[in-house]
Image (cartoon, rainbow, N blue to C red):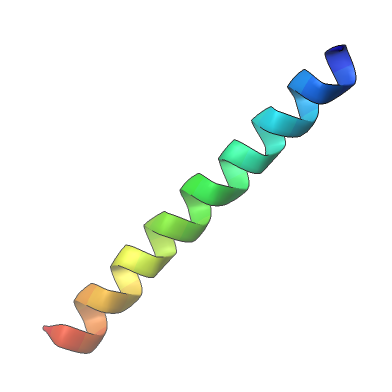
Length: 31
């Protein structure tokens, strides 16, 4: 359904942001 598509897209955006900031944080911690 359209609702599922939107929900999945939102989850993907959240996951992308989380992994982006997670990578930044690890770079900062271990640099």
